[in-house]
Length: 314
Image 1: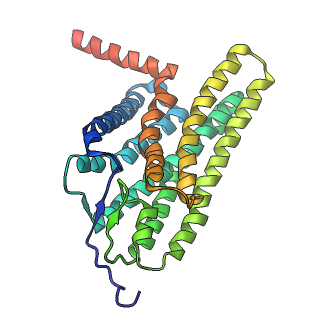
Image 2: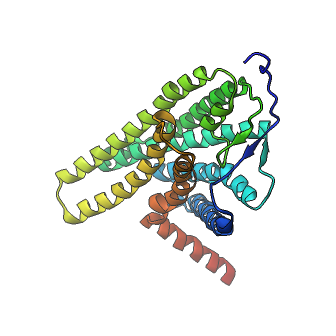
Image 3: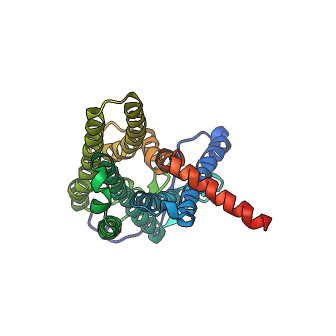
């Protein structure tokens, strides 16, 4: 590394997705539609929760934070991806790359912790319904919302500062559609062992432990429901828990496979597809899985529409 110990890279080039030129417009339209769906779905949830007093409960407090997180998480990468697909300029400034990485990690971690809070809320509501309001006090709810914001701030900052100390030399081409942590480490001409250890240990704690807590919560929910046999209740439980666990597995499974236990045989195409699963698909599905299929949310939508109609008729 002698003689190459200073950062000579002022910008990076994001190669984007490995798509043939003749299919570029088709995929652009697909990703644009997915991004618009994500934005509108999550904005609708935020507006309904703000406007309808019936939704001012712990569950919807967590849902509103999750929707905001999904909205921001998707917006960290998708606008740049869409811009690059229609532009010949694939560059992103060095500072812009680190900024994108910071907010990517921040909102990914935030979603991680919020999913745990939501799983715990459902666990208390189903397993201890008579004590729900006592357990899920305003103080605990505030704690379960504020703590993720604090923890994610420090975790994202840790990785960003560790990345900022590295040096990048001649190679500035990132074979990805955003400034991915692992992709940047591969480009560095510095010793990255500290970064890799932090990813493995700290990242493992932040990803694996919440994942296990979520699985445990839903397992307890299933056992609690099965103790009181009811065909309708069991079907509803499996439908709800199954759909929730599908999104959780999609989010955590791809992250664990990419960052905590990466395979030496992972190709660039495979890693890109896995990244798309949790950066694009999961934020788009979350509004439908957690909220828009919900009876309370549908009722809130009807009430808001009726209020608007009555306001216009006066």
